[in-house]
Amino acid sequence: ELADVDIDTELADEALTTFGKGYVIRTTSYLYQLEWNDSVAAVFYNDYWMDDNSFDEKRKEAFDNSNIFKLKLVGWEVAWADLQSTSYTKKSEEKLIRVATIRAIDAVIAKLQRKYEVFRTKTPLYSGDPLAAKIGLKEGLEKGDKFEVLEQVMDKNGRTRYKSKGIIKVDKSNIWDNRFMAAEEQNNLEDIPEYSLFKGGKKFYTGMLIRQIN
Image (cartoon, rainbow, N blue to C red; front, side, top):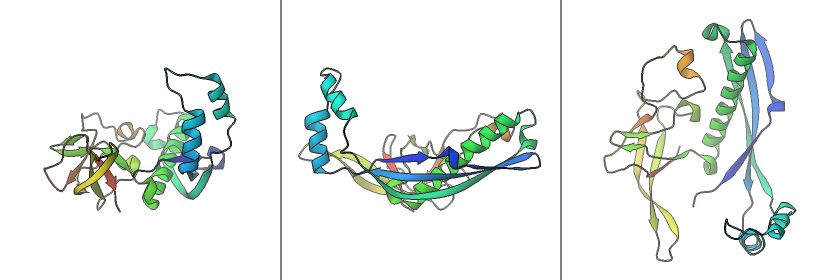
């Protein structure tokens, strides 16, 4: 089954250094996982669960004051991002720092995704022909990356499962640069596709889930 995780990015832990007319940002991010088991699930569904048609103020208050939910530290990573002002001659220093900060955060999240299997990139296929998905450099995509293609199925008990249907590989010549403000940095005004291409088969279709495996 697919696991849910959470990230706590401490912007206060960023180190900002100025080099000439450029900036370098260092970001440390911590990856946590919610500890979910049968006993926690039982309390959650019996005492806290509500929907739009059954709102209960007492249940909400009980949930807000609950102490049964625990987070487990999975790990942490450090990443850097640098930005030269020559690429953004019309940008203020404040905007330059903002761009570098966002890129540093994206970079450290991508490192966490690659290092810890539970957090590896999962996304639906945008197209089956061409074989494409809306992920790119922002998610740390690079040549040689492989993804397992999963099809959602229903078992005999009515539970959703994911069945492996094959392996696809990133097309190294068609990786989308979706980093923050990348198009402006490159002065790219062309109407380029907003997705990355993959190789590995023609039996896949839009909506199938792909999950990074390396």
